[in-house]
Amino acid sequence: ITLYNKFGTAPGVLIEKDGKIAFMLPGPPREMRPMFDNYVIPYLQKDSDTVLVSKMIHLFGIGESMLEHKLHDVMVESSNPTLAPYAKEGEVQLRVTARVRRDEDAEAILQPMMDKVSEIAGEFIYGIDIGDLQTAAVTRLKEKGLHVATAESCTGGSFAKMITDVSGASSVLNESY
Image 1: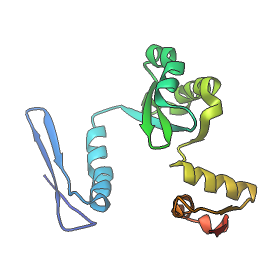
Image 2 (image 1 turned 135 degrees about the horizontal axis):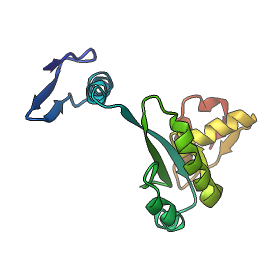
Image 3 (image 1 turned 30 degrees about the horizontal axis):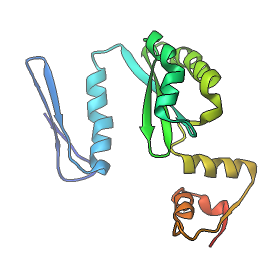
C-alpha cells in the first residue's frame, strides 16, 4: 500500500504478508514524523484495545547507575507501569510507561509511580515532559520573572548559546560577555 506524503515527494510504503507488517518511510524527519503519526500509529492501533502512555521524568545531579541503584526494587517489582532509565548528556531521564485500555485513565496508573520516584529521588527532578535542562531553566526564569547574564571566556559562550537555543530566551537573558 502506498502512503501519500504531504510533506515531500517520496511516498511511504506499507507491506503486510503472512502476519508480518513492514513500513518504509522517507528519511527526512520533517517527512517521516507526520507519516508515522498519520499512518503507522493508527494502523498499528486499529486491532488493539490498549495503548501505551508515557511520561518522562528529567533528573539532574545524579548518575544513571546511582539512580538505578536507588530505584532498583521499584523497577524490578513493577510491571505496569514500567520504569526505564536513560542516560543523556548532562542528565538522566526516567520513562514511566503504562499499558491501559483505551477507556481507562492512564493518569491513575502513572501517578503512584511518579509519586514513588519523587519520594526516592525528588531532590534531583527538574521537570516532567519538559524537553531539556535549558528549556526547564528558561521556563522557570520566566515563571519567576527572573533574568540571567553570562560572562564566559574558556567556554566561548557555549552556556549562553544553550540558553538562546530555547525559543523565547531573549526575555530572560539580559547580557552575555
